[in-house]
Length: 512
Ligand code: AHR
Image (cartoon, rainbow, N blue to C red; front, side):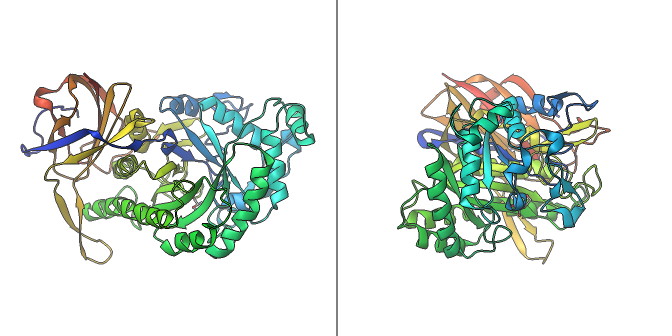
């Protein structure tokens, strides 16, 4: 359904959306539009990698359809190899002739009985990143390997042609030019699977690894392992211990999942709102972590890297029916979570260096689902497509006049809760304005009038819309385009646009 300027479902009032050109919020780092890819379930094997000899169309072993679809949404950064997987990963297992590589116990093998064949290692992953045009972001194992092991990995990746033994090994493996891996995570979830540390202990570990890592190659950006969700004590404890040290940190991570206990494709209206209200709470959460970071004077070196975020539904709803660990279906509700979250990231871009949704394919909130020759995009993919104009843009303040609070009952405990109906963000780049709006109401449309302040927008605009009559809608191998964004060029009458219930839209207009 595509209706740029008519009333839908009986709601004909108009709300003003002010776009304040002079009120700049910062630059939206393209890296905020990144993804996470772990050696877990079907992410790497079957998802990204099908093998060079597969009958599935591939480029040097990588699923061609995935490469093609990714290129359309301007991938910026891809995190790898975990997650928890990183904590037992030895990078040396993944280099050299593929048929000679060892098969190892994967971190997740007790959950799914699968082992790690190491067919995809450093060289392959970098090749994939180059194919799609994304920067790699490596997670270093600081639980089960030493600083020297990580030094050697950096040496293998970044030392220029013809210098060290590890560099020569890279060359022998077919890559004379350095990979120049810039982003390195110093551990993952060090409060949990990544070492079960206290924040104080981790601060010491970080210093130790950071000094060796920084000494190994110039220009690295090291990301500290930050808090889970609202664990503010982690941020506070780490900063207390770390802030007076020699600083070698370039970002501090945050993991934030929105969990649902129900069925990912069959949910009540209250469950729709409950999940969205969890997603909305990331704004309070990231601002509070940020205030601790600033409180310790660390805002220059510890911008937030939200390197795992998204929805986490119960297992088993994806096409593999539980074979691929954590694989889940993805509906309009997940798309609304992505849209709301990315609007929050845009509006807080001064605090955020990078964000990578978990995960790219066949896992938690994925952009793609695949199985053998089958491959589909999810509603979440289309949100990344609608929002791509924001990458690298200058975010500006935008406000909806009289934004409504929608009341609902928390399905878990019956307690009253509420959520704001309209979520919005706006940015401009190269004389083009991008405005993205999510209508979080499950059943009421909204007419929105764009009111630019300090600029004039051309009335010829491009509108992209992700919408479906049924907010449970999703894509399947049998019906791959049930949910997709539709783009149209329209003339905006009176600057008014109708935003149907449970929809996400983007508006792109020239600034005159
Ligand atoms: O994304 C799945 C897992 O969730 C990651 O491996 C871990 O870091 C997090 O707990």
